[in-house]
Amino acid sequence: MQTSSQALYRVAQIREAEHIAIQNLQMPGLQLMRSAGMAAFNALRQRWPEQSRITVFCGAGNNAGDGYVLAKLALAAGFGVSVYTLVPVGQLGGDALTVYQDFIQAGGRVSAFDARAQTAGIIVDALLGTGLSRPVGEEYAHAISHINRADCPVLSIDVPSGLHADTGCVLGCAVKADLTVTFIALKCGLFTGEAGDYCGDIVCSSLNVPDAVLAQLPATAHLSSKPVLKPRPRSAHKGHFGHVLLIGGNRGFSGAIRLAGEAALFGGAGLVSIASRAGHADLLNIGRPELMCHAAETACDLHPLLERASVIVIGPGLGQDSWAQDMLRHALASEKPCVADADALNLLARHPVRRPNWVLTPHPGEAARLLGCNTHDIAADRFAAVKKLQNQYAGVCVLKGAGSLIADGGNLLVNTTGNPGMASGGMGDVLAGVTGALLAQGLTLTDAAKLAVHVHGEAADGMAATQGERGMLAGDLLPKIRELLN
Image 1: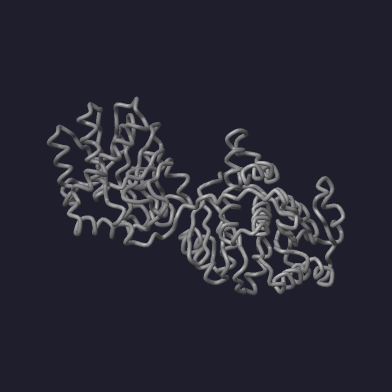
Image 2: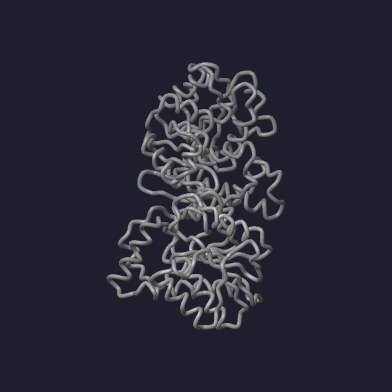
């Protein structure tokens, strides 16, 4: 992925930047369109230098204009060029009409799209662009299906047609691109939700719009960077790196708390204790004697453990029965820094509270319960959802999923590591344990969440690269997470 900036913007902000460039900096819209078409053509040639044919699909707006500019450049470079349009020429206007006429005057030909359209070489998607906010219409849906069925590489201009550029939602259907060339600045919707299945690699061209223009607009979010841990002092001892207490592992769910406990160890915590049901507490550290495991059937059993802990992780395998409710109530009453995951979140949804010193790590289903909505509402705008979670519950909220989001009330961050191999049981338990370990070592809530989410996904990416995504186990990531933290 090549980007000139880590800041992410919504479409309305990009339009405002264009307006500033046109009105205040005397950068005509036609100049920006021609720069966009050239940037896309240059990216195409760099990605596929051996290709000499393109098939361009154009709609009606400025996105189509970018496509016509690209088509003219390809024609001048000796490419075989086929262009299909979904609208009569009479519907083109402004700069898009001008560059269409330039293409025709250069010897280009345009055909109306139908089911017999032939594709060859590289397909260029210039159908809909960033302005789409409603489900794709029938005719465009046919064209998108035609593109996706073709055995050709695909370049999408600005955003894959059919993908909402603000949210990453597919509006009925969308082009599956191998490369997306976007303009002026990165759009929020290219990095979360369903976007990963449609954008391919992402290249951003500023179109020579100065950074000072974007500096006038507050970024909506940023791509998350990986915090770097400082080397440990040579005189360090285990007391310097915190004591994580993990609470969970109800009857039948001992595996979850064991995974979270091991993750806290591999994440670098000085000491790790587990409070769990008496029936299996003595078995939890078999094969992992570094875990200090305790039976906690009542609040009286839990209190001395809470007093010794510096950070609490609660939720993995917790359940939602009266024991679970009692454990959560007393854990939160301790007022110590906390990571809440899994059933702790489901219980919290019934009796919401706000805390400044915790990290919540819901997946979309848990987020929906926390906000009293459904998963469709979460997916419709993940950025809005995570901001609402943080506003309602305070602390730091991590909305897990493709392009996990991290909100702390001042920052909104998008993680770019991870892959579908992580869609297996126990992954969230590992993330919770690593986050708790980083908090115990003195990281801020935000940095602990950022680093945990990043290395969790990065470890999975490393495993996928060598062993594939299917059959990836949460526990297998632990040695790689330790390596990445070091």
